[in-house]
Length: 90
Image 1 (cartoon, rainbow, N blue to C red):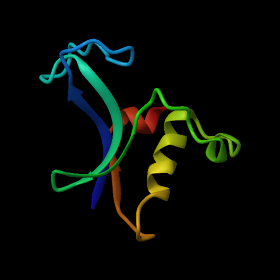
Image 2 (tube, rainbow, N blue to C red):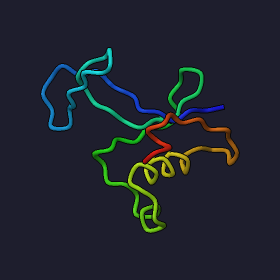
Image 3 (tube, helix red, strand yellow):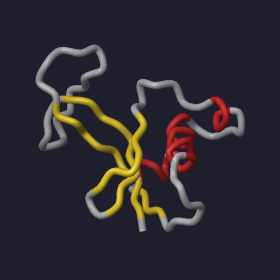
Image 4 (cartoon, helix red, strand yellow):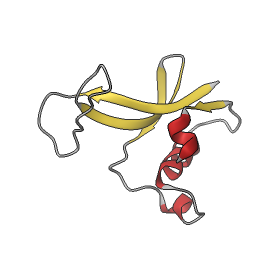
């Protein structure tokens, strides 16, 4: 089983893509969507990068398009994937 969720990468310096994240212990930094298993990140996608046109053209939201792009990067075809409510409601 793999999971899709957001990850926060702590960063103390200045950068145009740095987010103020008060709800996470990591604090300020970069946030990305990620697919992980047992504590290891398989792939990630930063939301400041444009969502793939391939999936947007099929009617998916930008969030779901980023998720599908991450699935495209996986080696095997079949997985049980779990997401939290943010991804289900988008």
